Amino acid sequence: QEDQPRVVGLMYVMLLVGMIVSALIFGWALAEFSQARLVQVIQSAAVAALVLNAVAMWKQEARCPLRGAQQVAQDPTFRDSWARFCSGGNAKRRLLIVGLGTMAFGMADVLLEPFGGQVLNWSVAATTKLTALLALGSLLGFAYASHVHGRALGKGRAKKPTADETAKQTEPYRMALLGAVIGLPAFGLVILSAPYGNSGAFLMGNFLIGFGAAIFAHGTLTATMNQAPREQTGLALGAWGAVQATAAGVALALSGALRDIVNAAVDGAGQVMGLANHALGYLAVYGLEMMLLVVTLCALVPLLRGATAGGDAGRENARGAGGSSTPSPSEAGHGAA
Image 1 (spheres, one colour):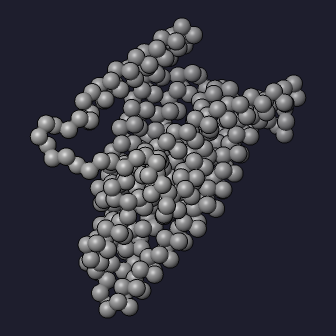
Image 2 (cartoon, one colour; image 1 turned 180 degrees about the vertical axis):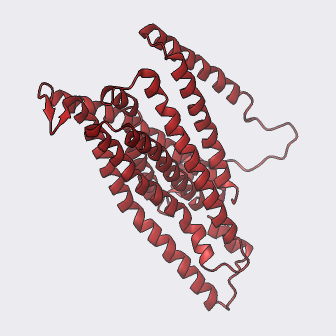
Image 3 (cartoon, helix red, strand yellow; image 1 turned 60 degrees about the vertical axis):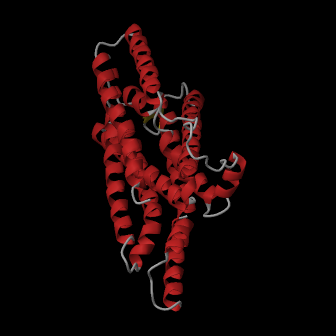
């Protein structure tokens, strides 16, 4: 269990490295921009994705047991496993928080590059490199979250856990909370860059969006895996991934639609409050993202308080049972679940 945060970090490091490298390659390939060149770049990316996924799936997991191997008990059905997963530990609330936070950060993904081009008048090659900056922020965010949470787990393994055991349970929620908090000024900087044409504020906001989103994602995933029964860690990872992917897809669709609706509504109005009308659609989406982050924070605080209260109650029970705070192996198993 103590290695789970490192697994999370490794998974996303590879994703982010791919984003950084590909964004730099795309920026170089699109330096001399044309519609035909853009189509060629997209086609090349699609072919590369097909090849890499085929290699990744090849003989990844053998589904048929070897001959003569000891037969294991039949796996429970998905319905039974899902019912058990949702039966405790605020599982549905945690997944709801994942969806809200993912939407809050994800709506900007499809708009940051066109915002830089349409509002700040950047070139196509320059806006393409924004993805590399966003991914770099995410990479540093995951490195920070993995380091801090791994240190908290190390403290939680002490023989006489006191406040450190509570930190082990609350640290993922604190990470998620920190990520959501970072997102608020990040989007604020992006919004402020529009009226002043401040590229520095836009770049810093873009970096902080990636940094905060990574910390939030690491915290929510680690919390989901920690609270699941030990044999359902994989199911917890899959549930988190399904909710995040669905929320990200919905966020991308909504952000594009909302931007177009707002821009169509103010079309022909010239400047509104000193801003070009084509900037208002972007700002409406960024404002909505900030509202979603506030809702996410409101949903996270009770979980953080509950985890803290649970740790305090566990230590009091340990003292009352005879003064020893070292759990038995079976108690440690239940605590991990």
